[in-house]
Image (cartoon, rainbow, N blue to C red; front, side, top):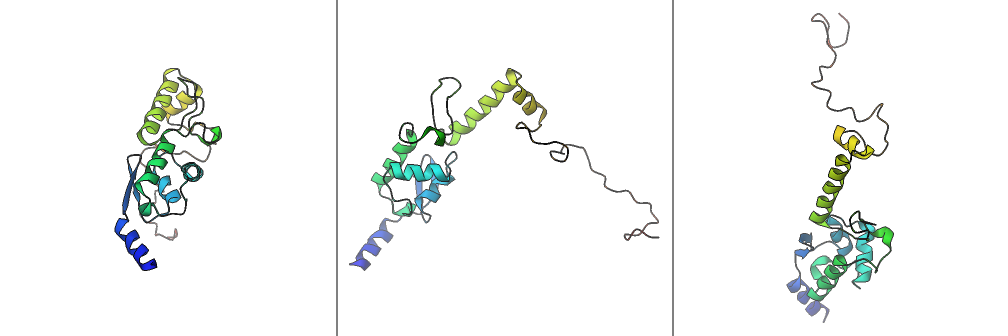
Length: 165
């Protein structure tokens, strides 16, 4: 009986699973595979597995079509099913509602936010314009880039590598 189930699982095994327009590795557990989608971290993937009622340690290639569709529907609308602090876009600038963005929407929204900050010339926008750190990091020893061509230490022609003539 076990051998029959093993053959059945091997026959239905998918090496690539497509969720949220991203190809996921079928050999990994689903909670690890979901973290490869941009905008999904470890905690969020565990929460999605709980909401979709899918065993988190189950390999992604073994999931049935019904389980994959439950995961996708949980990814499309996670608001209200999990705490707000787990979402990546709380109190959206335009609408004021909580959202969780994935893949291309996340990068597009992030670029628009930075563009808006630059346009209104907020402190963060100015720091973005100048290519400086935005979040208050120290600058004395870090962020020393764009200094031109580095020459290094110049030695006179009579000097050897050890420093003595």
